[in-house]
Length: 373
Image 1 (cartoon, rainbow, N blue to C red):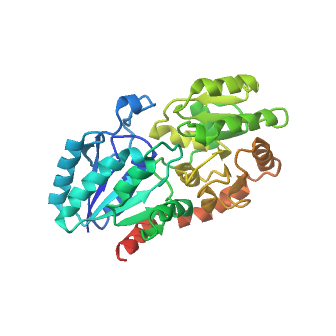
Image 2: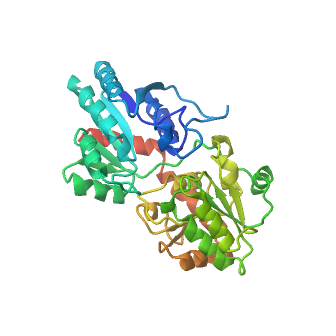
Image 3: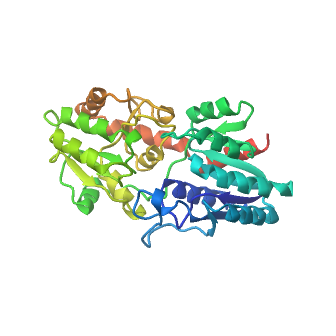
């Protein structure tokens, strides 16, 4: 089958680019696959990070055509005409926010004039975590031109069907992220990162308000006199950094936290997960999270709030703990239970069995079945 993936991909950085790289590597085994990515993904004024590009020689590269400008309608027309001429059987998009809907929707409408190409949209979200006026209208503009939808959780499916009750869809859980390598010994990881604490819990990824780092900081304030544990915060601030610094000072956590608030290169991710006993996801809102699948790759337990599709892949009391959202007391109690009942090894063993359900082969087989409907 001739396939084009149009989305964030190498040399752009981040979880969605990594997802598309792994998807390409699975699809190329039996198909003719091309990846088209952005020459301008976001205008710099809208991008809160320091760089939109991957860095380092250890990055796993895939061949990409750097073509699309997210804010130039003339470029969208040219891209659509190019794809129309190439006549792929399937045009695949990875969709996570309405900002891209005008671009994707226009390209799709032009490309499909060849009467051959079908479009499949893999949805991280249908309704974004941080909603803005016009989000639903923009999403409808794009989705009205699409043929099939793969949803990464039941929550995303519910959101889709509220807008498009007749949409052809399939729920396929996010596969395990294997791009970051394999687990290293905990002592080696701590030495590499210059961490000395015996017990370490990890908050990983871009720091946005909906991810609830403030809730975790309050939970740490409840734990600091009861449990000798340190919190490792790893990832860039995409929201007000000063807000969190004030909370650390307010709760007296300066000696109970490691701050590594810069973008974590792909080559170093394994050390952050391998150095940690468990990963904490205190989200206020979520549809699913790629962080869970990174943790699963490294066989690291997760303690997460009961939002979106996260509890679809974490079995409470078996591979981690699920707690009530926006509840620092419940989060502190779960962290304390994890250590007081020595749950790490039990959870790690169970995760090894669970991870087999989330292979890229099964994911790709699932959406090919959808394409036949």
